[in-house]
Structures are given as structure tokens and as C-alpha cells.
Amino acid sequence: MDFASQSSIPLSSIHQPRHLIGERAAQLLFDEINADSPHVHSQVVFTPELVIRQSTLRS
View: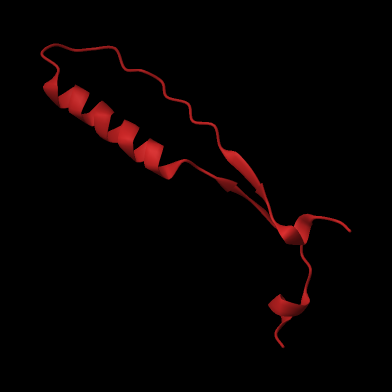
């Protein structure tokens, strides 16, 4: 066995909505290309999701 399979290091990660980020980025780009005059840029905020792994849960 290797160290990784024997260790019980608690792991968690952050899930980003990649698909939504890509869609919104493309839409912003198209808006920029198709604008007849300068426009106001908008701020986009996406909410990440905390993913708690099984190795993090205490028994």
C-alpha cells in the first residue's frame, strides 16, 4: 500500500460553476463585440460550493 491510501488526511474542495462561468464569459464577449458604443461593464459574482469529502467527516 502507498501512503495516500493509508492516510486519513481530511480533504475538502471548492466547486466552481464552470459551465455558468463559461456561458456568462461568452455572453459578455458577444455583448462587447456587438456594442455600437462604449457600454458599462457589469460585475458578475458566482457562488462557489464547499464540497466536504468523506475523509473530512468525523465518526
